[in-house]
Amino acid sequence: MKFPSLFLSHGAPTLALANNICTHAWAELAVVMGRPEAIVVASAHWDTPFPAVSAARRLDTIHDFSGFPEELYRVRYEPPGAPALANHVESLLAAIGQRPAIDPERGLDHGGWVPLRWMYPDADIPVVQLSVQSELGARHHYEIGRALAPLREEGVLVIGSGGIVHNLGELDWSGDALHPDPWAAAFNEWMASKVEAGAIDDLAGYRATAPQAERAHPTEEHLVPLFVALGAGGLPARRISLGFDMGSLGMDCYAFG
Image 1 (spheres, helix red, strand yellow):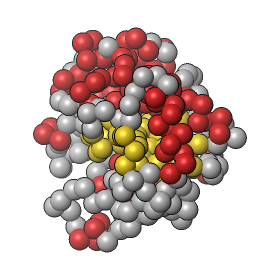
Image 2 (tube, one colour):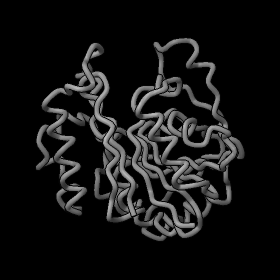
Image 3 (cartoon, one colour):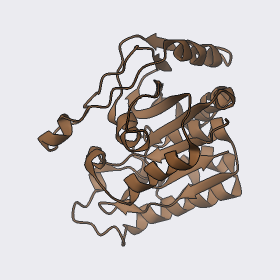
Image 4 (cartoon, one colour):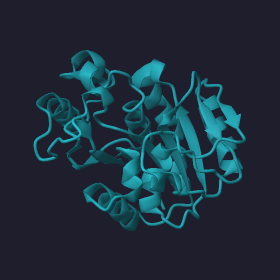
């Protein structure tokens, strides 16, 4: 079965415990798509100078955050790893001139386990995590995604996990989800319009042309996973409009291909 690739805005870690429109959407996605043979997830929370791939036999839960309720630190999502798939990912990336590292110990950070806990709660599907290189920009990650596209023919679900709008310094903890900050909404809708139009060059050059780009993403690690998913799945794309949290934390997701 050929799966679409996904870009998921994973939001705050507390979504692991939530019962809301975002977690319902993730769960529904899994029901509609069915069960993949394995999952490769490129997470904003593993940022390295060059690509790295996890190859642990079982992925420990990484609680890579602080200051949240104790209940969140008791959450465990520890799926089997897939060392053979990790080696396959390494070879696909090597074919485009990358020199990925294999990490035999890396667990699963919250960019992976927060949405996966809702999508496949039994944690019984093998998972490989892939790092991002935020300093290398959108086009680099689009090419990474294109290299991973053959995995979809093998029953592998490719996920980019980040955030469509992500500026923690601009969060309004009392913000009304129905009335997002105008600057965040402007960037979000620009991205949606370019995805709908299939304007890949415009998307890859978003830093120079999108409204409020620097404000929406002071650093790029949370948006470049979108380009991994876009490269892996191609067009057309389906937008899953999930609005905003805390005034400006964009939650939209996309299914590509």
